[in-house]
Length: 65
Image (cartoon, rainbow, N blue to C red):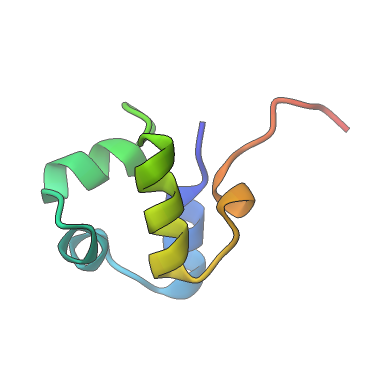
């Protein structure tokens, strides 16, 4: 699971903008945002770079605190 949707919301960034920056289709980015598919590590690190966050901030932990 990823937190791309939450981070986009926090930063006020649209999926279309992210898709353009990534060079991916809107449908592909939307599938990441909706957690229907997960980006490769390379893409995840690119998303983190574009959004100016640590890649760890884009990943949901399965640990319960």
